[in-house]
Amino acid sequence: MQKGMALNMECKAAIAYMHDYLDRELPREQTLELQKHLASCAECRTRLEALEKTDALMRTLASEKTPDDLTYRIMKSLPKSRNPRAWTTWVRRHPAMSAAAMFIVVMVSSFVAMWNQNQQLTVRGDLDHVVIQGHTVIVPAGQQVAGDLTVENGVAQVMGDVQGNLTVIDGNVTLASTAHIAGKVKTIDRAVDWAWYKVTSWFDTIAYGS
Amino acid sequence: MKPIETRLARLARKGDQRAFAEIVDLYKDKLYHLAYRMMNNRQEAEDVVQESFLRVYKHLDRYDENQKFSTWIYRIATNLCIDRLRKRRPVYSLDAETDHEGLDGYAMLPSDERTPESEVILSETQRLIRDAIETLPVKYKSVMILRYLQDLSLQEISDVLDLPVTTIKTRVHRGREFMRKKLENKL
Ligand SMILES: [Zn+2]
Image (cartoon, rainbow over all chains, first blue to last red; front, side, top):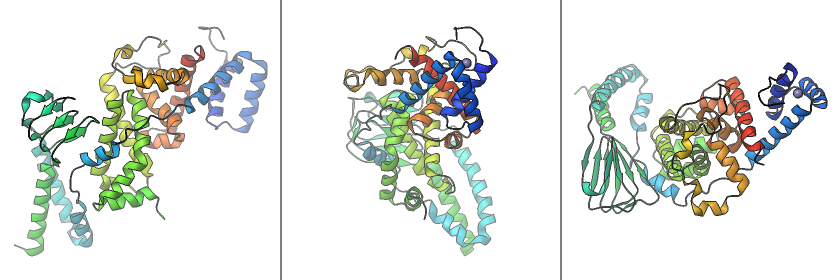
């Protein structure tokens, strides 16, 4: 097939069949049709060969070596405690309350939405050694932040050293392989804590009528 | 008997950190491989993997056990990659039958693929395939990576990307033709 020349109908159909064939989805009858066409069309034969080769090459692509301490860094970047099941279990054990619970959840989520609006990025700590881009606070590789670093309503991206604790309130944190945090990494989701507090106090009211 | 991931997810949901660490161990290599080929950058791949697990952790309650865990986690990671790529690269399409050679101004962006340490272990063929994948437009790239590097079926890719199987099929076909053109005269 010359470049730029339109494919004839038969070749066009054959090419579609080739792909289905490579996907192992070409029915037997069409496979026979394809074979028949290939027997009489050198261009399509060349094309199928090239496609098969491409297919095989793609499958040989080696995996990247995952950094050794990735699991450790992932585990360290997780919020400290996770126990959101407590109250949903409670709801399940008290089906009569479910409707009331739904109502409260809807109400609370609108509070949370309100809560999340107009939140400004606040950074506390050694500002000489961080870079702020939009809502991201970066500790560049090789930089040392003296003491604690607190980020509120933003993302902390640590590639260098933090010599104290790293606290992220209403945001999240990513740690690069070069990151070193001398103290603890803590993420606090205030909106959720607050919602949780609201929900429990409502349930207390309903349950104990106080 | 539920699959191992489902059991681990249940334990992790109750606050069992070791169960979550096991999930991380089961998937970190796959996600890293996926993210590295999508982003073509080690640091960004790591960021994506970290963020994926953080999302999985935060949303364990939303995991629907009728769905394969792998589908769910691949969806989270793939979407993160796609979002990042959309933000950084110019939009162009394979649908218009133009010649894409040299169209990607993207090659100018920093990539750590050519650092000396990785160059040593990369064979020429591997490098050609990587470069060809790198020039694929995002929507074909994700499908091709899931198909060939993660070995997912067309149906699984359709579940991950939440697109009809026919769309996935078309993208595999076009992606394969794109790769053929890229590799043909170089090998
Ligand atoms: Zn033909």
